[in-house]
Each structure stands twice: as C-alpha cells, then as structure tokens.
Image (cartoon, rainbow, N blue to C red; front, side, top):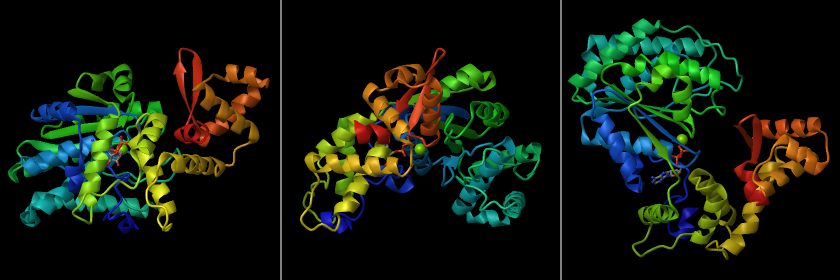
Length: 405
Ligand SMILES: Nc1ncnc2c1ncn2[C@@H]1O[C@H](COP(=O)(O)OP(=O)(O)O)[C@@H](O)[C@H]1O
Ligand SMILES: [Mg+2]
C-alpha cells in the first residue's frame, strides 16, 4: 500500500531500531557516548530507563550493534525479553542459548570445538524440556501464558550454567571479540511485567552473574527502574556502572527521524512529502508526551484507513483529529466497560489525575463503587496509578487522553 505515497515501506513503523536500520537512528549523542564509555571497561552494567515507547530498546540496540560492527564485541541478534517469574536458571539458559547462536553464526569453525558443542547440546536439552513441559518455544521474548504462577521445568544447576558462561566468554575472546559480550535485557518493567517483589528477587539472584568477567549488561525498563534498584536491591545498586534516563526525543528530532525514514524508503529521486502532515504528529506528541511507539501506531492505522481512498492523499490535522479520536474510542469500547467507569475515565482525562475520594465526591457516589470501577479500569489498562505518600492517584491511559482530550 505504500506505493500510493511513492514509498517502499511504512515510514511510521513502530519497530525499534535494529541491526538493519541503524542509519535511521537520530539524536541521543550524549547517552551514546556514556554507554560507549562504560562498555570500554572489561565488565559493566548499564541501566537505561524511560517512558514506554520513547526509544529505550532502540538506544540499547543502536549502541550494541554499532559496537559489534566496529569489532571487538559480540552481541546476540536479539534482545532478551525478561518474562514474568523468571528465575536465574532461566535467565542464564536464555543468555547462553543466545550467545551460542550468535557465536556459531559468526564463526563456523566452532563446529569442531568440543567445549562449544557440549554447551550447545545443553541448550538443546533445555529446549526439549521446555517443549515437553508444554511451552511453545524456548526462548527469545517468549511469553509463557498470562497466568501469574508459572512453574518452569528444572533446567541445569546454576553452577554449571555459570561455568558455561565463563567458557563462552573465553571462546568468544578467541574469536576476535576481546572487548566482551553485550547482553541486552529488556522489559524490566515494574508492575506491567513484574510484581515489585518478583523483580527484586530476580535481580538479587542475578547479581553475581552480572559480574561474570567478559560480559556487559544493558538493563532496560520503564521509568523508575534505577530508583527501584537503588531503594530495594542494595547488592545490585553498588555495582551499576551508569544509568541513562531517556527523555522523549524533541519534536525537532522527531521531524528529522521521519524525514530520514521518508528519504530512505522513497521510491523516486525527487523529494517525497510525508503522507501525514507534521501538525498531526505535533498534536499526538503533545497528547502522549512524546511516546513514539503510540504515535506511530496511530499514524499507521490512519494511513491504512485511507490507503484505498484515491481522493485522499495526505492527512492534515482537521481531517485526522476526528478519526484519531474515533480510533481511540473504538479501542476503549472494545473493552466493554460499565457506564460509570466510562464517566470516571472521562473525568480523569479532564482533571489529569484524581484520587478515589475526589472522584467519589465529584460523582456523589460511594467510595466502594468508585473503587470497583477503578479496579475495572486498571485491569483493562485504561488507567494507571501512582502512589504519592499514602494516596493512590489515578490517571488516564493514552487511549483515553486521545479519545476525550
Ligand atoms: N533515537 C531514535 N532514532 C530513530 N528512531 C527512534 C529513536 N528512538 C525511538 N525510535 C523509534 O520510536 C519507536 C519506539 O521506539 P522503541 O525503542 O521501541 O521504544 P521503547 O523501547 O522505549 O518502548 C520505534 O519506531 C523506533 O524505531
Ligand atoms: Mg522497548
């Protein structure tokens, strides 16, 4: 459908920057320099945090892939998405599998390395156990069901896995990667992925592994991850090499980013104008505090709606606004919430954030029924809350802001 705009591909794709799209990366100069600096030591742990969709995964990918291209570093072809209830065994098994795969792809000679083949065989055994236990596939970014309690099959003792980590580091060094292996752990999100207690246990357990010689760890999560480590996980707090707190890219950078993509995907030599007027991006940017993933999601949906309308070529704000609101409203309607919950949601958009007590007063309803609605909205991910002192302050989701803002 992109030919309509003389483009090869979607310039509003939500995919993070990866190995193939490094030249589409913009900005973040200071943050990159800081990461490069840390990674020049023999062993490091970098925390990168930011609001969802502002570019944390992209930054980590950019840093590790540019370094591995320059040489001296090995990094797996994927980021490791940490799942709920992961324990250390599972983490190390995933890391080992990813490193084995990356090493093998780069160095075919390893087929005759006995130690390497032995480790590889173990990763296959682990994979078989997972499959036997009914998990779809072992591995990368797998979500093993929504249920909060998942019992993983017993894998291989941590001591053995640690020994494998060490051996892999040596093998990697012998294959020209003297500066280390960079591991990217993503989705260390408190509350959305992890309960605080389980994240605490997981990181506490993992501490010693984070210090294995020859490895660098990039720990990526939502805003608040660094603070969480600082106040709850002493053992890890002491050994964090650096932290990067990512702010949203500025509007100017966002414009650069889109221009770059348009030029890159252009099917013709002359300058192509973007399918979506920048005013629309500005509008979405201010509603969402620069959450690019969300903004690009809406842009993509907008364009697929008009892709077969011969008369509509570009999207301006007057045209886009009502459609954007409708799209967001439809997403809310799909969640089937009660009329009172809907009223509450609209009130939260108006106020920006309120407590249960404030809402009950405004609505002239009992606290219990307001609480019930807020719980419904929370489970359907239409509101978020944060604790300020003793109070819980509820605020609307991006969809709600877009629909009723
Ligand atoms: N610095 C950047 N340069 C170019 N594109 C970026 C940059 N940061 C983020 N993006 C784009 O923004 C979107 C969201 O980025 P992503 O890294 O997935 O965010 P996060 O991991 O923080 O949720 C993706 O489409 C990504 O390509
Ligand atoms: Mg991400």
